Image (cartoon, rainbow, N blue to C red; front, side):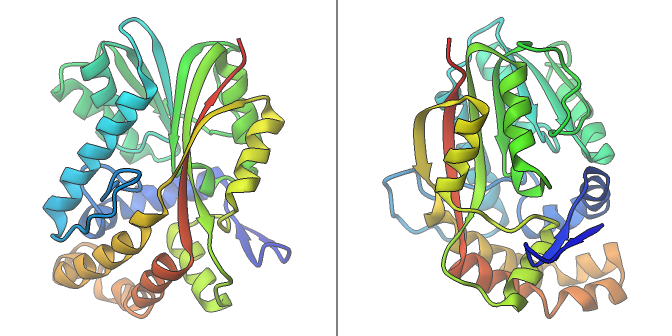
Length: 289
């Protein structure tokens, strides 16, 4: 772990991020979703209808989110997608199932990779969906290897987001598209709220949409589309708080009373940060032909 006073907290490295996801995958499944751990679309862009249920609604909305990403990417059979930070692999597997494309997923969590391999076999796409350990800031693929790339709420974990954009650009073929989402900052949170968010999720501080576009442009990408997904953040923070309370006994059984006692005072802070200060943007980028 590296301390950097300029960002007000530590700078995570790939090994630490991987260990956190190795250790807390079950925790995420109990407090967020056991389908996929990404920013759900409780409402689609332009919609403002409220949503209200708990875990099953979260799962359904994760599936709806994946369907939106499949439509946005528009992959065809025979094309090859790189999922950067694939976690349990469900989005990549759904893409393989619905588009006929080949997908390769990388992640720094060994347990999540193992789960993705199992789910690909169960989903009948093990021949077209492969998963392996990989660092988004140092991709082990040749230049111009992929037709498209996907990275959902992964760059927030990177100590150098610019390297992530540069590497995605490098491995894409000319004309290839990159669908990427990241967390953004709203307002000025207290040090207590920012620390709770960063240490719980093991992330760098959120950035602004303008900085996201600057990083992408620096890498050479052109912007095709941008979607403001911030409308979903407050509900997700509340949902996690509710699910944490509802599943408290299960979480204690899984992680032990001592560790859960450390989480108990943090969860209300996380909810406040999501509600008041966290944003989310989705960018569709393209490497010039």
